[in-house]
Image 1 (tube, each protein chain N blue to C red):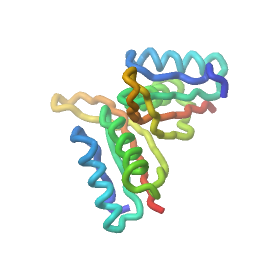
Image 2: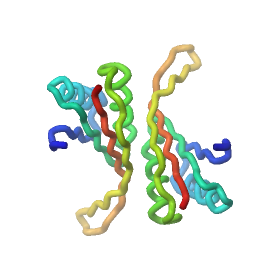
Image 3: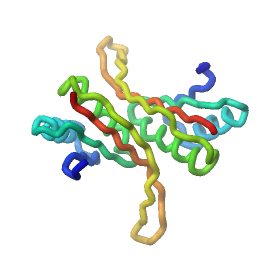
Image 4: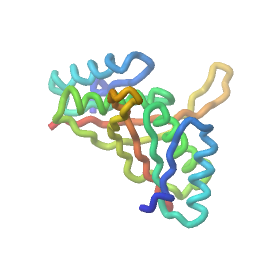
Length: 91
Length: 91
């Protein structure tokens, strides 16, 4: 999957990310990957659910992966944060 | 799966839910289902990741499902909330 088919979910309003997914799919992308970390994980699930229920009804949920990523703070200490990847597939 | 193998994730500290999962698995449950809605979704992912990385290292992530649930408010209006189910399997 090319990098342009990935939508990183952050702290912006949900509708921004929905628009990004819909735009990519309408321009021909057969699948879009949602990636989120920490508290944005629940927003990523919202995006996936709203896209498939309200916007592109022939979109299905593909594989969902969860993982742990290690972040280094500016002081050099490490902290772990959970991450999710949700694959949306058209057709 | 019997109802006792389900851990509902809410707003308590993550460690409470981790303890619930570890207790169930140590008393013989081969799998435990984590269920969460709304903002607790990211906490459910934290619980799954911490259990398998720190507490029971032979636990794997089974299927992960996301869905939308309809909640009725006291005034009678409906609102939608995203939900996640994460299956943890031992062995």
